[in-house]
Length: 109
Image (cartoon, rainbow, N blue to C red; front, side, top):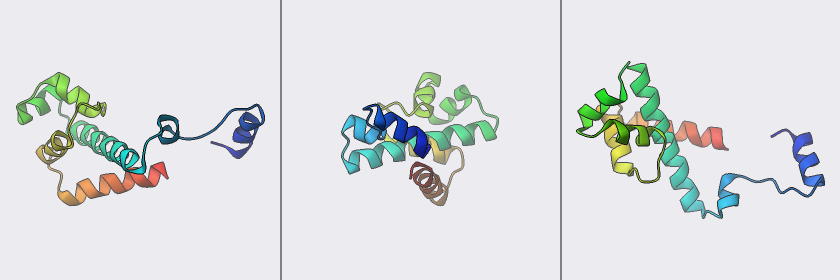
């Protein structure tokens, strides 16, 4: 957010923060949310880059299209295990996974 916009909001009594502040997340909870967001975004990006549909990815994982939609939407019911299995099914390496997380953390900072 631009400094002048933030100053105007604060001058009118608004408090400006981030989602972690608003939801009162601990640093561990915030890190988990950011990690899951990074992984889910990477699944979507890799799937689309390969020209696969959600149905095709679901078949690879022996899952359903609706579950893949939840994976890509970072639904809180999706486990980190499923996120990682999806990435590996799309050809990601552990280094790729680490890069996705690092990239998201730089963007969030």
